[in-house]
Image (cartoon, rainbow, N blue to C red; front, side):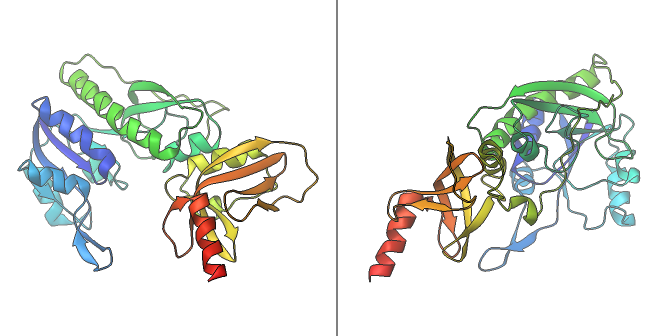
Amino acid sequence: MRVVFIGTPDFSVPSLAKLLDAGYNIVGVITAPDRRSGRGMKLQQSAVKKFALSKGLHVLQPSNLKDDDFLEDLRALRTDIQIVIAFRMLPEVVWNMPKLGTVNLHASLLPNYRGAAPINWAIINGETTTGLTTFQLKHAIDTGNILLQHEMKIGEDENAGDLHDRMMLEGADLVLKTVDGIRTNSVESSEQVRTADDKAAPKIFKSTCEIDWERKGIEIYNLIRGLSPYPTARTRFDDKILKIYDCIFIPENHERFPGTINTDSSTYLGFYCADGLIKLTDVQLEGKRRMKIDDLLRGLQNSQNS
């Protein structure tokens, strides 16, 4: 089969590598245009582009997916199937072009957690299981017919970054299994059937990251896990934004106002919530690097004493 692979970040790379290792004919790779970033604002290539070029693959980087020149180049590839992982929304003229259609990998067990941030929201909502789905693209986002699914457990202390990395690797296995099944006509598609229990996974906004200390401790703990290491839950401390990467929830009955600080100023820092104390362990204070809480507190204490 003539395969076009579509993706941009690190999450996409293992799937592309898996298809290449299995001997599939990758006739083209579509990825995002190079972007300026970093202190020097230098042009940076996407993770997918770097990998594709290292393998001598043909790379396309359209800024407009409906551009006539791009569409002409894409048609010239005579693609049998497209695989899209972690890319922006495709117009119908692109996803409907191959005769075998376009297959997407989604980081949830669809139709549960449709949307842009399924990994984050599964942890934020305290789920203990999630999974991966390959499905066929159609008009509405994340609604196409399901091809294969793979269930995964979520660890009690696992954060979004940990789960992302596991899904990145196990997702590559599922993509290869799906493409193998399509090639041999051994995989059948099925329509998505929604239930009242299905949850959404919308984009994460800055307001999502703000901690409400009046909530229960387990909810705050899950929010911190679900947003770590990016975009990170946050609160204010020392009149600055404090990003929280990790914490410990200590349940206890108390009469303190939610958000009250508990600290010895040198080794530990916690905030009281509705039903206990959230003890911070891994943080980043505005203007400083990420560090363990005792390092931050000692640094603040030293600067005050100097």
